Image (cartoon, rainbow, N blue to C red; front, side, top):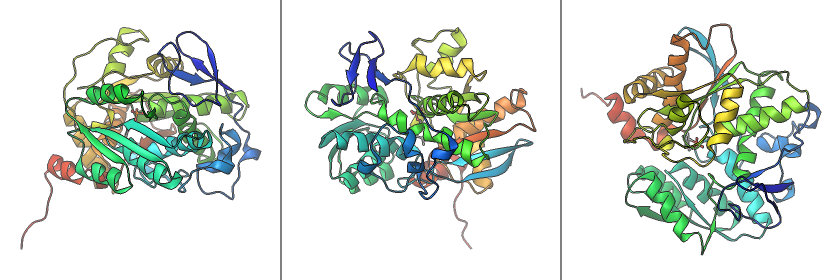
Length: 378
Ligand SMILES: *Cc1c(COP(=O)(O)O)cnc(C)c1O
């Protein structure tokens, strides 16, 4: 296994940790062998039950019991859906799925200090896994990041720096610092995606070794789509499943570069106007892996959907009313699901998974404000 440069096709050894190729473009990992159902270690109640399929030595695993999250049936707009509760992770978001594998890889290669930029959850996850690994960590966040996320990052020991401007300004500031500290950006370093592929494995195992018909998930950079593509493709190659699920990626209409490219029928970045969104976790105006996300979405028969701020808030309320207290970013996916059901793209009787990526507990101030809820006085 080697890194493959996305621009030149040059290959690089995994022995030398890197976050991009000599061309300046991102690097990907070549196809991995994956596993068959007999390879699952059922005695491990975390995503490391699939360690046979992960490209890191499980002996160097930096783990906090992440993954193997519940899959819970619920009614949504007249159909039955399976909610994947990926907000039930050690740090409260799906980012732990990728971070456990990426930090395990970096530690095994002797990296002792890392840099990351994040809207909040990735930084919180990296900070926690670095604490566990005994690595130093610096995280750049937008000034607008929610305070609970900043507190969480700092409490776990990372050096947190707020940057004025947009999410893209934060990424640019991190790039500028990357000469001095290893840039462990989960949006560049492909071992993050190696971890997120376990989403596909878990859905397959939890559904009784079957493929769902559809998976609906929020998309900023697109880690969940990339993970589903990689994981389900491995299962398909190993003849453990017969077909890929339809992959549906949901963006906030206020920040929707994937939606614009999907609509335009292209697989490269097209500039789009961007404005603020309550879905802070997907407010990514210039994603890294356009083609790698758009091609599998199209090939699967899925689509990229965009939802308005009002639709997000309505879905947030609907999830909370069912007991699922998530952050607005996660509710965006549920809003996308509502559109797909209304249009008949997703139908009753199918197996539909909705991925809920982040807990509401870090976003209570905005959730309370958006839903207009609070205590009454006697
Ligand atoms: C980071 C994040 C996302 C988006 O992940 P991408 O890889 O950027 O698509 C979705 N939901 C939550 C809660 C997140 O923290």
